[in-house]
Length: 635
Image 1 (cartoon, rainbow, N blue to C red):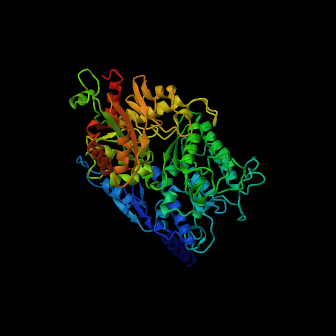
Image 2 (image 1 turned 180 degrees about the horizontal axis):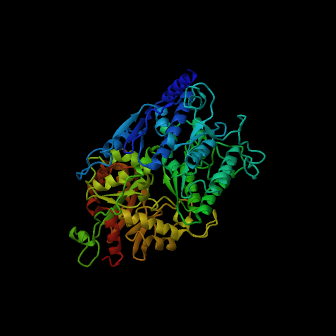
Image 3 (image 1 turned 135 degrees about the horizontal axis):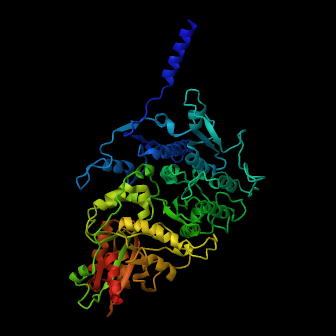
């Protein structure tokens, strides 16, 4: 009788503990995380819950999607549109070429809760890593351990109803095992800014924040537990003290980098001030540790890999003089300082900048099977002759040639959020547009890039954005490199760019940003001539020329993004002069729609004094004409 009761008790326990379900091999599991964005930013408890659940979901997604495109989240919105739903539905629909959408044949299951997701993907994680709100940097450490050790990051909070209580300690919850703690066993902070950094033989820097990253360097980066060619540069938990909109924490961007076991970091690049989130640290500590972080990655890969860095400094919350933060430097200067430092350590930025920085599902999209080549038709010298822009002697007509750089698409998140509106603009195709999509962004949004190429009009042309296959300062890759002391990486950069330019059929680089680094020199131009032979647009206007057959000149101005085109047209018209020689100007636009671009072109052409002299061309035609003006053989 006792044995019968024991068997019955075991069966009851087994049935109760049995998993809810498992995903089939072809099934896509979706989860609506929009509730975590739709909270009152003024309610600190709601905001904490939102942070906790978003970070957990994104990290789980990164782990689950290592095996394939399995878990898809709905979270990001722009202009009232669910961006994640837009792309999901598009990729399940027939393509314009008559082919089936990438996801058309896949069955879909909608998960109802985080607990269900945890059950479905229970084989993809081993347990939990706890982090400490009192040391906000530990949230970046927890994200690193999530990828490196297959763990779920959870903020330690024993309050009733917290995610920690719900998933770790509640007897009625899943009771996830704690495998790592970023706080002491007695609940006090692990990192205190004094003594010796726990688990290492290194003395404290005097900053708990900086000590946390030195611990990460010693315990994870140097031993090879993390990727040596990916890193996340996203805000830590100090974001809670800002007033940013919910999705501006960019936690949904983490999945791609968790999937690749990337280390995460959030440190100031400035060495002349203490950071706003750690004002009592010794001046320059953040920047010193940040340099050590990336130097450790370079040492790991022996200088043989360019490092993909996703993210951007959250400049309205940290490290700048914005809105009374107390820093010495403005947001643009801080961006430039960040990129200067990264470039010194062979790292390129996938710049998920504030405003349109949020992206979800990159670990899902990364499994899309790209084609080896994506060719498109570029203008030829014969085309320009037929248009009357080059005479029989090979000289360009006496006009003012205007090319527009259509950017700044140096972030996968920007393409992801903006293209649902911009690519469907009814005026796309009406005028030539040189889309400056950085080719590396396809790493995180491959199906979007494939779709864009399939649906391009003859007036949609493609050039590389700043500063090629990733946002770098080119001369910071050249020796001498005072910040890093590393040997030149220009050859490494050249080979890195060759690969991306070849796949996407690019041969023009629309903009190089020098920032605080010295302007590109002849050594740099010779390198670009190897993979961008049809031209480069340099940062600073002034000199121009031809290097190894590659034309180059400087950007004239950034045009203001105003509701109408009058102000921008006035700037351009002021530059155009009555002359006996052709003139050449490139202007940069930032997140302009095709309708705005068309309106600017019409305003310029309709000017009664100079309109007939102006010729608006794409960047490929522009450089063919420029070379012709220099009497250089072009075919």
